Length: 102
Image (cartoon, rainbow, N blue to C red; front, side, top):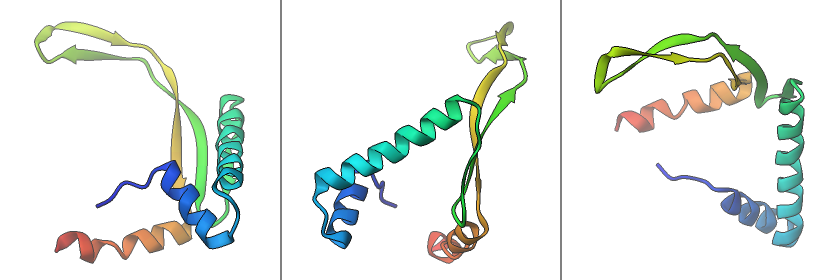
């Protein structure tokens, strides 16, 4: 399994579109900035056929330190980003399973 970085995406899109890497980087960075801004304003971000990002709140809970299990560590409530994949993404990722079993 390989890791695809933002740089990899920029190079691939640049090669596919003929735009310069700097132009593509600016668009990709603007895209990321807009998603970040929307989520930090507690807005959902829905990308049809890809998925949806939404901010949810976790409940406060008591954790345990593995080195000192008798000591309770309070974990406060916090906001986290959840991603729910869209139908098309789910279907395409499901096709990867046979490859992963090899």
